[in-house]
Length: 223
Ligand code: SAH
Image 1 (cartoon, protein in one colour):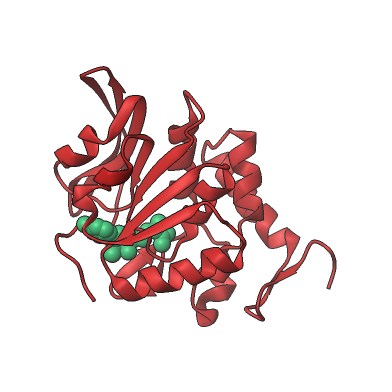
Image 2 (spheres, protein in one colour):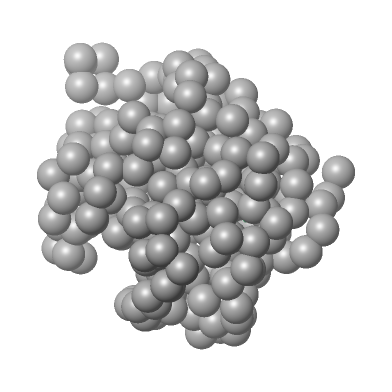
């Protein structure tokens, strides 16, 4: 094993070459922020998925993580993160839909304080362990319906939702700091657009970007 290989808790080894292939693919797909590219290169995606799928960890595709959910496609993670940091450096980020915790790790690697909400308890527990094992200290988890945000910790400089629905919950807009930015897939189940909302005082400027397909933003919690 060389220095550029990684093996966390015996989950498996991924070569530097496999990761470089993903980085090239992200660049081809329009990701330009060098800091984000570096984070995508160094975040061990294989650590967040089932060992049986680990050989696909650095493919640019979504993969199943159980409970009918998926780990987001790396391009989507990079794109959403790039949009979040485009105008300013968010210090406090709210994430809705922790899932396996991969996007959470990417946000934590920005150096921000991350507040992550997940409605499915076993996914949240697993993500918490993974994030702790990777040594990220500034991540806070909550088992709740993220449609209500995390009022006691608001306002947030940035809000990212990894699940889609036709409207943006008003609680999320209210919990966005002045000058803050929200990124979320908005639309019906089969047709959503990455949507950016910038808050300036009491004004909200909405921009619709790439066509995407996310799992649905659901209501209530699962134990
Ligand atoms: N970035 C995550 C995405 C997981 S898929 C990853 O790469 O693993 C989206 C997640 O959103 C799922 O885990 C789903 O359970 C969660 N979710 C859906 N609706 C939610 C809600 N109302 N509140 C919190 N989490 C929600």
